Amino acid sequence: MAAALMLRASVSLLPKQRRVYAGSIAMVSSRAMASKTPVGFVGLGNMGNPMAKNLIKHGYPVIAYDVFPEACKEFQDVGAQVTDSPADVAERADRIITMLPSNPNAVEVYTGNSGILKKVKKGSLLIDSSTIDPAVSKELAKEAEKMGAVFMDAPVSGGVGAARAGNLTFMVGGVEQEFDAAKELLTCMGSHVIYCGEVGTGQAAKICNNMLLAISMIGTAEAMNLGIRLGLDPKLLAKILNMSSGRCWSSDTYNPVPGVMEGVPSANNYQGGFGTTLMAKDLGLAQMSATNTKTPVPLGSLAHQVYRIMCAKGYAQKDFSSVFQFLREEESL
Image 1 (spheres, rainbow, N blue to C red):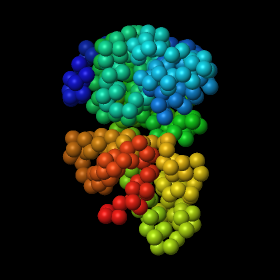
Image 2: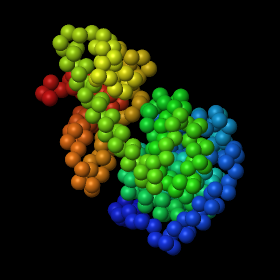
Image 3: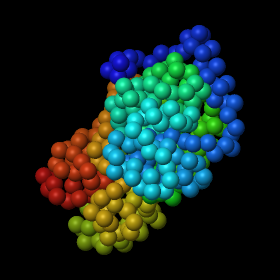
Image 4: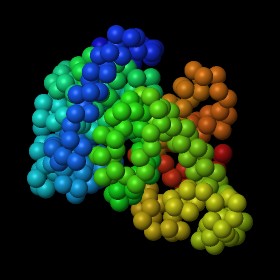
């Protein structure tokens, strides 16, 4: 089932499917918006961990699952319920948020033998904050619809720091009537929750954002490296860039040069943050979408190759801003 799900092309809902979907929507919308009923959370990694904690801070009982048991231990310590599978989460909660690394992980968590859809309750609201292929989001929405549930894609931007602070940006795709129900939960974890359109449009916005982010990070790293080799102090150069036309998020909020900023991965040997392997994955999604839509993305393609090379050179688990270190060490480039 998972393989077929990954390969099938997305199609518009047929009239009969729309009637079934409308019934699901009505069931979900009937929930009291302000209720503090349990919320399921699957995926407690670098991003999911602080997101789930922010739900707890806002008074929501969390029912959690992660494939790595050690990731769940601290949630037990703060009173969250920990289950043995995504299906068990679905059995105990009718609102579930997932935060997963890739297409195969999302497909397995939703449709696998112990997946959410094995025990999902009719009328459940399923919010996926993973960054995956928009076509996969559409297919998962159709599978959820068959079970009487509503699926929305809601990928995030902002990184681990914003996840901890509850300042993420959520890009939401799905049926518009359910946006308010999703927003109730998402505003506990983010300062911006934006409705993008039908299922898959949240993912479309996210992969466009991350392609631009990768390009700007490489550009910032190149500019900083050149300036340093020309004799400029890196803090001075960063200050000049950030008050000039070259300023961007990569230069003023997430600078890739060690010693320029505190509290960013470059100040911690590029540990934490957003891994290079994940950036390469997201750029792969952008490349796939560009191919499918016949869209020229020459800089996006080059950025994809840079991050793929970095993964092969031992940077896979480092933060993606380690491209600065990569450029410094790879004289042949």
